[in-house]
Amino acid sequence: MNLTTTNRYIPNATEMLQFDVIGEDRFRARHNLDNMAGVTFGGQALGQSLAAATLTVDNWHCHSINGFFMRGGIIDDAIDYQVERLSDSRRFATRRVTAIQDGRPIFELLCSFHEGEEGVNHQFANLGNPPAPESLIDLQVFAQENKHRLPENIFALLSKPYIFELRMLDMETYFETPDTAFRDYWVRIPSAAQIEDPRDHHSLLALLSDYWLPGTIAIPHGRNTGIKLLASLNHSLWIHAPVNVDQWLLYRTESHWAGNGRGLATGKIFSQSGQLIASVTQEAVLR
Image (cartoon, rainbow, N blue to C red; front, side, top):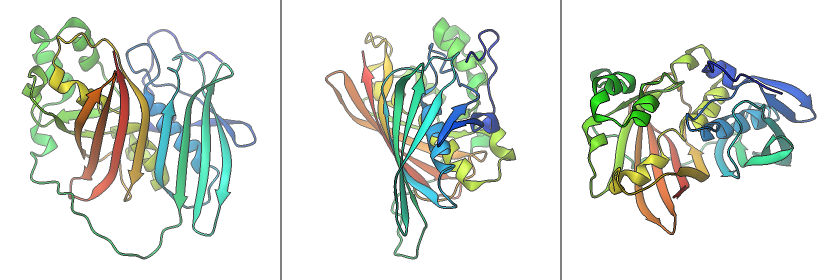
């Protein structure tokens, strides 16, 4: 099934969660999201896999996902999602989802759903007092204003409209090579404002959680280290609270290690009120 090859359309949040039912617990995604590097955006597989699994679970909310990227998705081909019902217990349900293109698996997800119950609670992660997103420059505006400072390919990447809206807390650090790998940014999916189902917002959170995260690994190595490839290998997300991804979320990312051609990035996602929405870990390959 061929999608679109010219003047590629950027799907909105609703379209990213649309499926055709093509078999028992088997769903075909109607739209692909270009990562602007020749393959589908990795977060698409995370979000659509979770959305497909959610279609096989009644009412319960996902609390954790673990995804494994096997090969890049072809932008112009449909992706099929096969869901396997591993377990359904009194309080939890577990699903395995395989994303398939041209008969080959390109991604696999394990995810767990929980009915929810009373229990102890705490949150020690602190949002702090970051500048409001409304006071910060939009990514596309930043690219236009700094075109003379950006390599042509980076300018093309940053200036192109996308499903996400992103605002870094200090865009000038984009041109620096600090001694640590740490980056904070506000991010949201404006087109998700039309979506009412909170479980769909969790699927879109999974999609969003891959955006800019692996790039944190490269921060202390600057632009002249010869890194030509930075691609996700595996991704884990723990969802702690309901979320509206059309509202601004602060993504606090850092990387404590890179070596042997790989690196690890971690992140915390906060609401504007300071609630910890999710915790994220991703391993990526660097070449």
